[in-house]
Length: 290
Image (cartoon, rainbow, N blue to C red; front, side, top):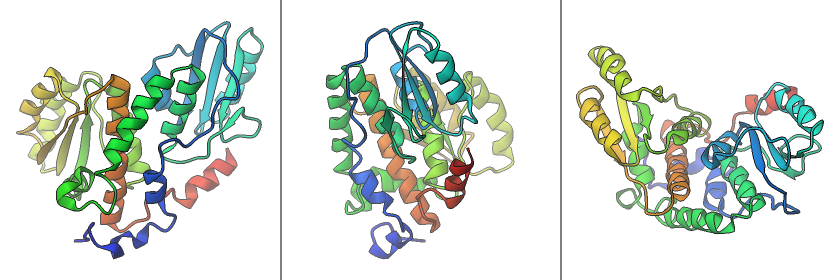
């Protein structure tokens, strides 16, 4: 088994994703002006998590509509932009296409950059400051030089190795999709998220799979009554249950701190599998085509 405390394990990180992870806080474009309200946001791909966390409406007739073009929308984002520009709302396009108001390069870590841009554009500097403080606090114990016994991301990566992760975040439901994306793009690993009726899903579907010996690992993100009930159900249906409590702070700061820890976890999982944690060339070719 590869050792995350040995330097040679990190040779597969050919593009230096660890440096991007380490220096993530504070990166991304800054709005050039103050945008009038009310505010709405339509988001695709990498921008979707930020929009989900802020809970803004998807459409406004006046004010400002942010269009986050961070994914393979197959032309939908452009069409929605044209439709919005026919109305009274100011349309602000953010992403990596030509002609955007703010450029954010493709990256599995760009959800943070979209969130940062939106918080600054909405005048929520205090909320952004809390998010950044929590990420920096997490960083102090997640980077490669922190040994396994003191590094929760490394420990979680070893726990998920050769298992199929099942992410459940009853108090942070948008985080489940974010976790699945991180495991796919960085960890090169398949993972699961439950449907809205999660407890019923655990009681039925997982019972059958456990009988067939699937190596499942349930990762409970955050606390609360629903997570406690899920733990009781899942302990007899999966290989292992991992509880990841949130830090203190606002719901937004807690969610992003958990997301950041999972990003490091996915990074270490890729190293354990011996694969490059950066995006594959096939994604770059697909971007060129779309």
